[in-house]
Image (cartoon, rainbow, N blue to C red; front, side, top):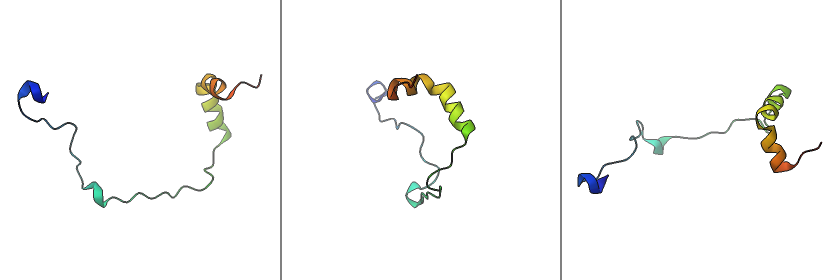
Amino acid sequence: MEELLGYHVPTGRPPKHDLSTWTVTDDWPHPVPVTQAEIELFEQWFGDLFDELFGSEG
């Protein structure tokens, strides 16, 4: 784009806030609880991928 226009064009949107002041906190329990319904959902949508990666039991 710079070659086409002849001047520098910044890419992306500038941050709205100063990211250097942000603090990231992990307050999840260990281990993270997972329900049976969540497991079934992942198996339904990603079962073929899981079988390919980890092998099928039957």
